[in-house]
Length: 156
Ligand code: 4NP
Image 1 (spheres, rainbow, N blue to C red):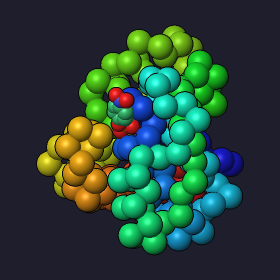
Image 2: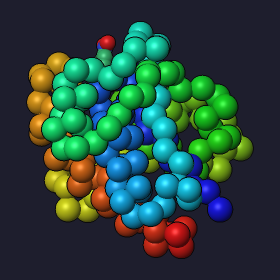
Image 3: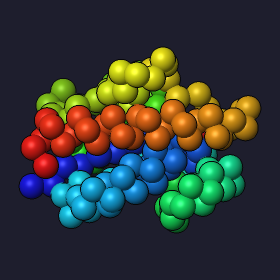
Image 4: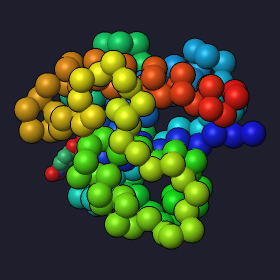
C-alpha cells in the first residue's frame, strides 16, 4: 500500500515545501520511502514553477535536507489522489475545504493538528517576517508527530 501526503500553503514556496522536505527526510530515515509518497502545493498560483524561497532552502540545507521541488498550484485532481491533505494554517484549510469535492475520501486537516505538544495549530508565514528557523522548529515537530500518527493509523 501507499500512503499519499500533500502539504498545502498559500504560495508553495515557504511553508509547505519546508514541510515536504522535512517529512520526506523523516520518511526516508524510517525506511518508508516506497510506502509514503510526499508532495506539496499552494492554493495560489503566483509562484508556480519557482524554486522554494531562499529562506526555506537555506534552513533545509542547514539541517542537512536536500530539496529541489518547484512550486505548483493545488488541483482538483489532488483531492482524488492524496490520502492526507494538510493545511499550514486556518486560511489554507478554509480555501481547501471550499474546493473539496463532496465525494473526496481525503483526510483534510491542519498539519499541526497531529502535534499535541506544539502550542499552536497554525504555521506562521515566514514570507512576511523572515522567521524561518522558528517555522522549522514547528515543522519538524509537526512532521515527527504526523509520521507517528500515520505509522500507527495506517499500520506502516
Ligand atoms: P507560503 O508563503 O504560503 O508559506 O509559501 C507565501 C509565499 C508567497 C506569498 C505569500 C505567502 N505571496 O503573497 O506571494
